[in-house]
Image 1: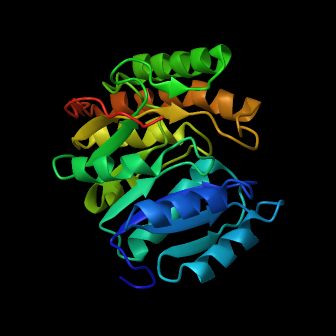
Image 2: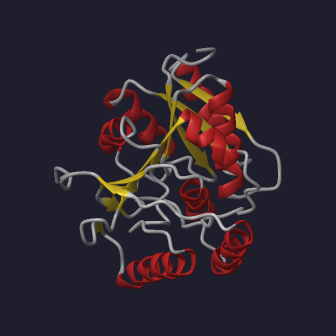
Length: 258
């Protein structure tokens, strides 16, 4: 695999995560055998420079992609996933840089793709599994999931999860679609296309932890996009008459040591 030491690549978008990125990189390097691709969205706080130093510290295991505008989490994920495939990745994982996704779950996500095309790290497949979230954040997340599921008819408990693992062929097929979401809506937009293609989706239970440092990237523009995109996707499905596949469930919940 050119430039990276593993065929399993974890794509991590960053924007102003200078405090969190070194901690996440250390956890990933110590707890997994996977490679890491940092996709920095021109962070004004110097996150990109920190990522470059980490790539020198961990040669072959950490690569860095410095993006060009337009900014946005969705654009970063798409560019990073395409780069991972160019580097030869057979499995592409995605996770946030803010320490809300624990690397300990990566092995279960990767393992689940033996029988599925995409594995979703799910906060809601076995109830509600979040830690340190204020009530209003939890209510917003639950409402967003319910809304997106209702409109798109996706049979996935956590359609807005940003913690996933994709098989190479499945991801390449989805990336060939006209992905339009610049923000969090990309998460259910990609699942929508995967289901329409008949891909096998499995949910793996995780415990989600509120970010330790920094600020959420949620904005009015992102919320408006998340409200509109489900309807746009459904209009596309109606026009093509594509059926949505049923997801699978991973057996049993995972636990996290406190």
